[in-house]
Length: 531
Image (cartoon, rainbow, N blue to C red; front, top):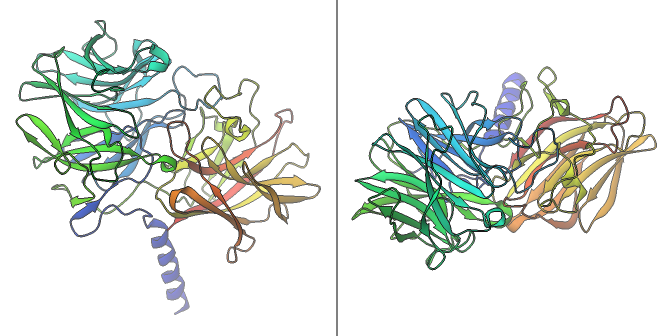
């Protein structure tokens, strides 16, 4: 009887850990928007048979270009990442490149290969490919060099030509609100023509960007957002010739709905012949969350949502494949030899930062000091915590949730200025911090407005750290010394969005200097996100 009871308790705990904190699938054949209440900015999607694959902007985060997989466009899982450890052009530096590097990718499948094209605003347009999205991707190739070249998307035409549409970042190129097309070599590794501007949006559709390239019924289509991220709209441009002239039409806008700036995304069809459109909404501290809209064609123009406005609920796409309710991973028990796919570092990965101890079922973060060349960049804030490269972070998964981690800190016997704990980041950070003082460990809470020591613990003593997210990112920090009774800090901390991204949550272990030949560490038994 006791064994059965223990099994039942274990099963209930396991089920609770797998529970989604945001449930887009309503379980009755319908879904609600957003389908992903997480920061998958600038999403693009392709279909291969009954499978859908999505990628999105990852900016400075590593692994970059996370790949999501679905069979119904509503329930998604993380399948892998195309840039596992180093961001091209930043080799040799550990400085977090906030707001830089990987912008607005496109993902396509052509003749047995998956392709991703993305723009680095400081370097140009890159391409990488694979035959297995869960496996290893090729090294990125700089297809087109140039500052300010962003948001690329390829089109393999029936005439055997390969075209690429892209936009311009005004901050680097000195020009924006226009779209251009060039031709690529057959192997997609280099541009073979100069880019030609095919649409000027300055008059009617300023800040046009994020183009996606398609062809249907003899028309070339460029789907592109305009008007700005928070208040803009979605356009479709069409022409009978690849270089235009293109005529524009607004096909999705906020209207009477609460969904601001509904734009920048991807048209995709199903095996059953339905058309759908995935796009983002800027949700401030939660980042750019992903919506799914029904789509039909009328007179060779797309009609997205309900008469051109976003839907709140709708029937799920008709798909032949069975697909259980799921969401991108959130919690992690650290019982594997690899980190969960939801985790990303703030900068290029150094393998000395961590150890996945599958035997003990824990994650060990080794203390690490930023090197001299790690001074952040122009987009980093003055918050020195954001200059730490080995911040281990993940996206916030819902408007309301609680994250709890069971940790213990083992600082080096020499006082190396080591600090470790749980962190909330954006343009400003707030964090639980453990540090050595005399023979003990102090737990303190630090933010822009707070700097308070709350308790003392013994070295290597387990402690439970918690952050509770409420609506609009108001956060309550609490802790426990036994895992049962939690003491709250009643002063709320307001989460702040980052550079082009939402707030993130995670863990850290750092030190003031790398002069010692060894250091301490933070052990993490588990990380759990609950409703």
